Image (cartoon, rainbow, N blue to C red):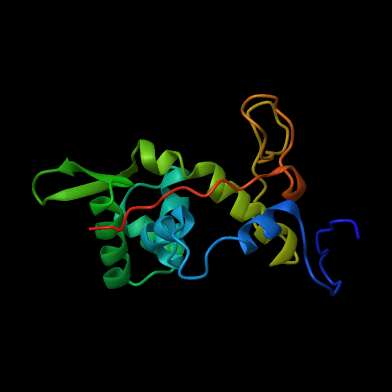
Length: 170
């Protein structure tokens, strides 16, 4: 039987070289960089705050307004993102003491993932997308994933999984 990927709305088992390789890995909690990343940025208000920072909104009050997050929740999420070095706080006023928030290099490296999540939401979660993001040339953005070497598009059938020895976190 040919390997296939399940399409939305269809039933049946999803198989690919990727799922077959993952199924052969030892049973147990699977160490995963995605899980570690989600511990840092995976909460709704964290992602929405990061969205606003990427859009150029840097002040707390505006971030709260545009995300709908309560001040307490937003304060907590911004502190966690700062502790993880995803954002940095910059003072813009001494009296009273006021700060702006900016993405760090680590924060900017989340931008393609945020755009991919936005595009997924445009396609699968809403009827009418609220924004259209375009490149400075005027064309819509694309977040296709490609091989660094040959530039071939990545699909479930083109991946291989190479398990690595993982040391326990301390």
